[in-house]
Image 1 (cartoon, rainbow, N blue to C red):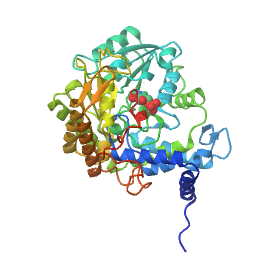
Image 2: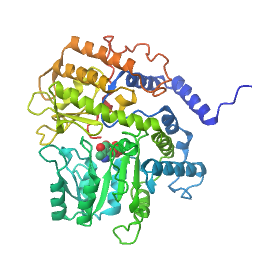
Image 3: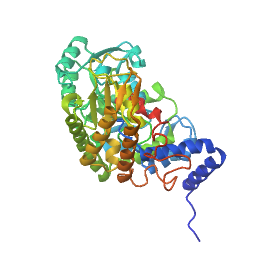
Image 4: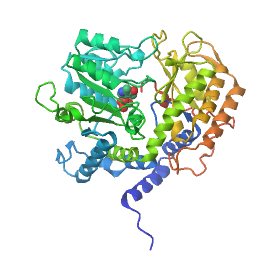
Length: 482
Ligand SMILES: Cc1ncc(COP(=O)(O)O)c(C=O)c1O
């Protein structure tokens, strides 16, 4: 007698088959995405590949559970399994980051940041954070974000070498006496000195919030100093470097029992309320299951090895690009990120992004300090090595990646801020190079696999065959702000 298929697996298989039979149009789009991810050199710094077991948990029947509140204190019945899953995710988050408190319910790091700020700053109160153009994030008080509407935001910037200007942070903190100092960045290639940030926060009685959305994997693996015991709250996304689902976390270490602004309520209790009911309603149970799965993988030695490779690769990529004549901001990198400065030339960030995407290379436009071009154009290009390391590529492959990228930019004639002509022969040659690299370094065993066997759908040309560009329909992945 064959073993019965476990219920969740049976459901997933039936779901896949039903999707293909009942909605071939959607199924085909999803299949094409798998093929393209395999055949694309993804260097967007805010992405990683989720293990198929993470994707399975994210698509599980737990999605059908509606339960506001927290384990043991829900506002709906039927949450017994979800309670266990959420507790597991919380324990794994605490273990992965050495935290005393974890909240796994934020739908994203943006939600986590809003919750933390709502807990620690009164409406109209002051926050101090890195300027958007210097690599900060929208949720750190940009006028384009609700955080810029609700709080008085003051921003610090970079010194002449492109590093955080800690002298300015201290001066602005002294002058404006913020309720919260935020340490965190979307586009900063250097190590953040959380101890220094904490000393500045203490000097003015501010809470320190560390936003490690981009570097959470490096922090968990010990490749970047951890802020968890230094900050009063640490926030992160779970998809950028943790190989998790869309979502966020709030973590607290040593400061978990420190009183909040009312002088009484411990920060951990405050954060529970800040997420629900202050800023969110029902949690996403399946996403929380997927976070639990991803956080288990984060604790494994293989994850640490990958993060080591992420850092080594970024350094090698920065060196190779510099050697090819590109201006690398700060002259290199300490983390997963390399920023190319395009100011002073005709090439814009958006043209570089689009020309590269035509060739199967994903990297996103990014503003650079004192950028004079509009946010949708920009004078910078941001690269990241998360997925390259997940593919098992090492520093030698980084030289190939840099050479391919250089070749695309050399073959691109700029005709305007957004307009360009790309030499067709060079485009095809680079596509072939990308295809070869991707074949030599396939995505990790099982990652985005299993749907298609040989990975090519009828009617879809593989990279390098002169057919449609591998990434030609995947512009949604090239978002600039994440
Ligand atoms: C530093 C930083 N914080 C927060 C966010 C928001 O993350 P999420 O996409 O999870 O809302 C991002 C990126 O988007 C980021 O780079």
